[in-house]
Amino acid sequence: MNIPETSVPRIVVIGGGFAGISFIKKLQKEKVQIVLFDRHNYHTFQPLLYQVSTAGLEPDSIAYPLRKIFRKNVDFHFRMAEVETIQAENNTIHTSIGSLHYDFLVIATGTRTNFFGNDSIAENSMPMKTVPQALNIRSLMLQNIEKADMTPDARERKRLLNFVIAGAGPTGVELAGALAEFRKGILENDYPELEEEEMNVHLIEGLDRVLPPMSKEASAKAQKFLENLGVQLHLETFISDYDGKTVTTKDGQKFETATFIWAAGVTGALINGIDGKALVEKANRYRVDRYNKVEGFDNIYALGDIALMETEEYPKGHPQVAQPAIQQGKHLGKNFRKMLKGEKMEPFEYFDKGTMATVGRNKAVVDIRKLHFGGAIAWFLWMFVHLWFLVGFRNRVVTFFNWTYSYINYDRAARLIIRPFKKN
Image (cartoon, rainbow, N blue to C red; front, top):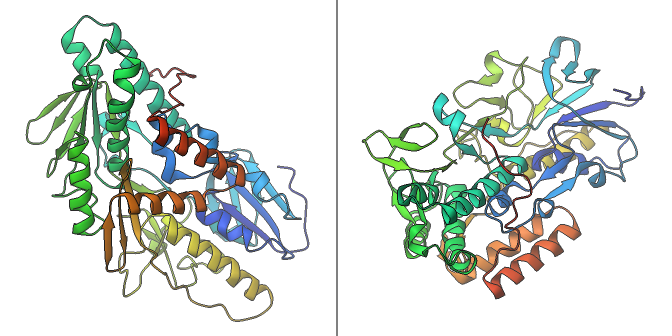
């Protein structure tokens, strides 16, 4: 691995998401060696992945090099690798490029797509958890529209222009809204041989409303926005199968589609080696105390989506979204600084800053404690918050420019098939 030996504490961090980078930033001036492992050499701003997949943004607008984030850290080392096993009894991790000893281990691996054991859906649907997956969706969407423009077969054209999304959480709602706006703003201008009405967007949800994690007021507003955009909602509907051509629901409905996007759930991205009481199997998360220390271990910590901290207000753990991850990362970084000075660590308290989701142009919903509102004001607030939390000044400028351009011209400039998608 070519990691230099050190006389200061070595802190190994697994995962360069919100939690991992927030933690490392707080240790910039401390006398520690930090080694970060991630499968990619960049941080992904996951809340905007759906804009990459629907041709609203280029991927480099929401991705930022991990090495650049921490270039001012004196004793920081990054290795692009997969961590395969944790050997806690020896304070060692085993990776795809070798093994490394640690003094402290911080697990911030986040989540992966949960297909709930359905192999046909896992094999044939399109997940959206990474930049490459978002680019796959973009390519497939554009390829299918191009094919539809050429085919004389009306049934095949309908299948190619049928877009089905599973899961009406924030990701599913934002995807559905973006696809509906693509139909309205792009289809009639770029594809004069196709009718706008030929492209259909279906959003399928097992519960009785969209945006189940948000308030009923926000759900109702979002549902109205989606319906006004022409999205076809199918609530209290469960998907049983997708064979690559037809989505089948448990109540017998069938949707012929060439584009089926799975946004119906996530599960913790576990690493082999930690089990027993520390592992909450149903959620695939590590049980941690109020200091984010993994139960049963003295020097292993977990942050963000992978950590389950049981509190009176959150008996099932904090929501698996960005804010808890960011706050836990910052707090643990501060606690490590206290620990290194021999001071007492402080328990973590989550401050809920609210929840928001966008449906489209001038259409968003926001929950801030007991305040619920939607429409243009919520949309501008959503834009401001997401710009603020993007990593890197360049990314903020480029994203703001793209959004302004799209708003004025009703356009999506990134509709490029750079890397054609082919199913295995």
